[in-house]
Image (tube, rainbow, N blue to C red; front, top):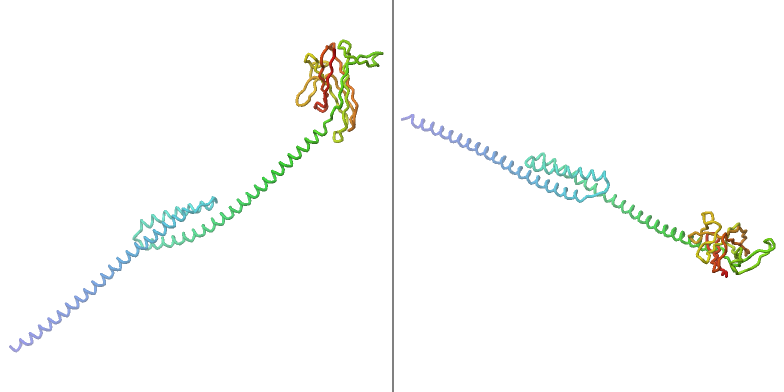
Length: 305
């Protein structure tokens, strides 16, 4: 009976030890559970943070994509760089979707997005500079075109004024046959004496007389004067109807009856031209044109009986 208290006392110690061990074990287990729970919560938080960061990077890339799309330039080299960056942004968006749970990749994409935004700002400055330069060039080109147009107008006006002056001078330099007359003549005393006649059967030649008037702006020198005669039957009087007996006048040409070279010195010059007829003269009215320098400078007529 004396050993029972000792045995009970020993059992109590063992129970206390087991209880202590159980409490210690539970404490350790609870501590481990808390640690694991903390790690799990950390993983969840980190995963959530990665997703948030991925969404932020993706949103930034989409914004960059839209801003890059608005950049336009006519510079081929710069446009090629812009196209390359647009392609790069599209590839980064694919990576962001593909590696949405990879914090390292998402962090890398974020840095590349920031770099692309800085590059975009540089592009904006370049394009603005080019646009400003282009506007300056366009303005200068428009000014040059306007100046050229003004000079062209001046040149055209000067050409027209010059042409008008030349025409005026040309018209002013045209000689005039003043007081033209025509007589039917026959010759006596071996052809030394002229006798006027109006009878067609007696006329040997038609004498056309006139004065080439004074003209100070006309060119001095030898002039060839042509006399063109249209007979009563509508024919042109000429030695022979061939090209050698034709004369140009007022934009056309016809046969001439006679011609004569004279020396003109810008003063009144008397001229007499005798026109023969290879056929007998017929009765009726003869129309006479006097031509000099391809222009009709006078006209008259004669009627033979």
